[in-house]
Structures are given as C-alpha cells and as structure tokens.
Image (cartoon, rainbow, N blue to C red; front, top):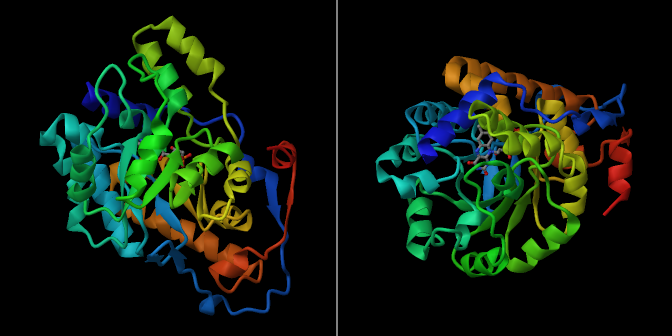
Length: 348
Ligand SMILES: Cc1cc2nc3c(=O)[nH]c(=O)nc-3n(C[C@H](O)[C@H](O)[C@H](O)COP(=O)(O)O)c2cc1C
C-alpha cells in the first residue's frame, strides 16, 4: 500500500503540473552591483550548518524510498551529494518499518560518502492514529539504517486531509518531539505549506535544532493527491485537493516567521541558484530543493550532475553580481520585495 502510494507520488510529480499557482521567489528582486569589487574566482560557497560543513549552501530535500524506482533515485542523489559535498535527506522511512525488505532502497545511500544524511519520518506517525505510534526502537532503526546525522520530522497535515488513507490526529506531536529531542538532533520540516511564527516558537520550545520551512510556492501535495484521487474517481478528495492547491505560507515569508534564533532552511519552490541566494538574504542558513532534482535523478546521473552544476553556477554569479565574497556576505545583499509577498512579510 505505502509502496504503491510512493510510486504514484513520484510518477505524478514527474509528469503532472503539481506546482502552486504562484512562485513567491519571483517577488524578490535582487539589486545588481555593477561594481562588485570582488574576484569571481575567489568566491567561497562553503557553509556551516549546525555541526556540519557543506561545500554549497543547499541540500537535497527528502523525497523517496520504498520502491525500486526510489532506490535508483536515491542512489543518484547520494552520488551527487558525495560529489558536491552537500547534505541529503531521504523520503519518509515508514516504508522500511512496514516492510523491512525495502530497507535497501534507503540504505543504498550508505554507498556514498555524504557530509550529513537526514533520516525522515512524518509527525502523524509519532502519535497513535488508527494504528499505534512508532516506538523508540522504530525511530532508532530508521536513524541507524542510513547512518543519519539528523532526524527530520516532516509535517504534512494538509496532505493527510486530502489523501484517502490520511491520518487525522495531530494531538500530542509536540510532547513526543520533546521526548525525542533528548536523543536525536531534530529538524522540523513542512512539505509545501510552510510554518507560521507560532509553529516555530512551539517547535523551538519542544527542542528542535532547526526548521526547514517547506513553504508554498513549489510542489503542492494537495495537487499530487488531487491527481491520485482523480485516478480512482474520488470526487470528495478531488474537491479538497483543488480547494487547497494553493494553501499555505509562502516560503520566503515562512523564513521570516521562523527566524527565532535557531537555524532555518529555506525550501519550497526553489528552482535555481538565485533562489538559494534569496533564501539566504531573507535569513535562512541555506536552501533546499526536492522536485527540482526528481526527473534528472530518475533519468541519469549525468543529467543530475549538470543540473547541479547549473545551480551552483547561478549561485556564484548571483554572489558575484551582489559583491558577496562568501555565503555570510549574501545576507548583506540588497533586494526589493513586490506584491503579493510584500504583504505576507508584514503579517504574522
Ligand atoms: C515525489 C515527492 C515525494 C516527497 N516525499 C517526502 C517525504 O517522504 N518526506 C518529506 O519530508 N518530504 C517529502 N516531499 C516534500 C519535499 O521534501 C519538499 O518539502 C516539497 O516538495 C517542497 O519542495 P520543492 O518545491 O522543492 O519540491 C516530497 C516531495 C516530492 C516531490
């Protein structure tokens, strides 16, 4: 069941238009420096995040696992993470708990030397639904399976509302996170709808080490679930998917809302190196991308590699043309903000 669902998510994300209507990164316009006064060849792109060091300020966001197709995708993504020395997450590891035969579709990434691996589990699985909550042993198993450095708890309650088999209980998640924070470095991550300021404060109080905003502007899980519902002609879920297609807090606004003193990762709709720079300008430590890498990772390593090189090239050019000699300096670059993002930034 989970394996089918994961396969469907990938197929739909690869072939359908599943993005939200508006990409809010376009509402940020960077001020060009005609006189940058730095040497392009001396630009430094490395970044420290928590206790990790990456060569570039972006990570490969959690996407998949659980199927043979996912194994290939994870393997290619891991090879890129090793080559470019960046961090990488895998998709929800519940599949490996439900069916241990699928464990290698995640642990395949252990064949590569990655600076930091992010294990992944959903917030709904931390508490009892119509099935029991995951145990301490379950969490330990998935964390060790990939030799993870961090544990991502993903929040996807909108998706749960749209998918036919969705988990509907959210009560008790924070206290379970508080318990787990004593044993694991936790990162709270949304999956396309963003976190509010109140969410960020709650999560910080619960002990998470960082927040990955996963905001609105890129992949919409309401859209993905809409297409799944369409396949089985589930008119009720189709309606919900359509109604909530553009629900959420724009990624750049969520970065601002979540800037509460712990590191923030900017994600949701990033397409290129300019978007990575914009997320850092707004206060994130680095950016993250998911669907942007999906098709290439499923096609060939060579395609994925040249896509990553393009992104890095964009980033370095953006740094050069803003006079930013290193990642820290990007925060000082100037920009203007257009509507509708401008109004979002005044809120919360
Ligand atoms: C096919 C697919 C599967 C995903 N599965 C997961 C998952 O299992 N766990 C998770 O935390 N996020 C998952 N995500 C969400 C992404 O990590 C990311 O938060 C979201 O897609 C927004 O980023 P993007 O606009 O760069 O795609 C998935 C995304 C895609 C496209």
